[in-house]
Length: 440
Image (tube, rainbow, N blue to C red; front, side):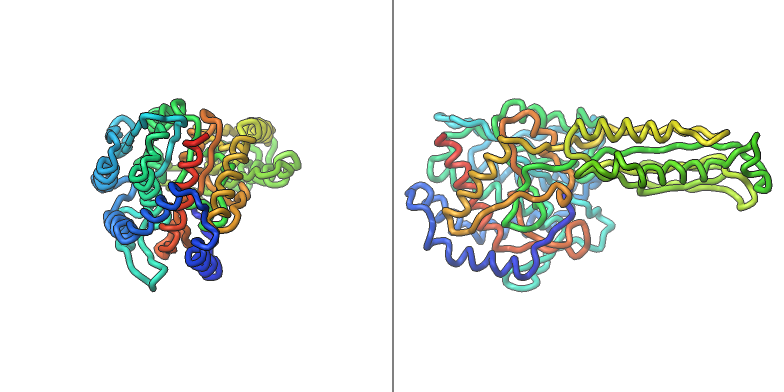
């Protein structure tokens, strides 16, 4: 779901430099050297899988397309010795999820790897195909968000299998089919992910993060939708503000939104944002939530009877979200005369709160990166990290880290671009990280 990609040409150039020089500083561990060599040998195959998956439309609501991409990756995981299962999504109005499992004979760590099969580009989008820009760049729907991440995950696990290191790990892979537009009820939509997290010690997400291979996510803000419904007393506009009529629904909605905007409690909460994304008001409203549209009928000479606002809250912790909801409800309750208002909140995405375990996992990942000559990895600011599926897993594991996927730019747009050398770099870092975790 992440949409903020920041890696530019300079970042891509330094990525290529890191790839060309990593052998000078790579770890002398013979197993790790074999991991790296196998990933290098599979570079063409990885690119082929990426192209094939990108060229298969898997917009969230193209259920057959999501299932087809799931079948493509399911076959690939099965070839690596994983037991593959398809979780049907009919109960939550989506295609479903791919789950792949491997329990090594000497498993010391239980690891959950997270990706998703769907994209934001439905079959009616003009953006449908992988297109090479130059040797190192290509565009395509979902290339960075996040079919590239799925390929990276698979490359790392294949290298671990070939070297025998996979036997030290208990691995569950969950590739969801509705990350970009979650099915409902959410508890059912995310059940496979939560179950896998409860079994695991560590969760690794292969989203693209902020699009920069030098960063990863130890925290992600949750995303919870809210809806404000306001009513007023209809009357001729010449009577607005009269003691028995009041200001009407639109003025009351404006008061509430302005109070949200100016409230010192809400605005002083670090990492908290709250945004009204759609508003309508008038005499009558027709709301179509499935289509994210609201139409209004009203006249300029009539005091508005109804108003509706849809928005979201982004918070870094459950506690912060609870505080924000309470403050917003208090503001809504201060009605202007002869108006009423109510605000409701949906279940949304939980936050992936920062933790000592997450920081430790980032430190291990950064150490791997430096040992391989790719430089340190730093944490993405939560303000630049959107909601993602790993948030449903993070509360159930000791350590979680996201953003291990493919570098890219212009996510969620028809200009979405992937940096192809990141397939190899990120796969090497993930493989060595998993190998070292298996040794702990």
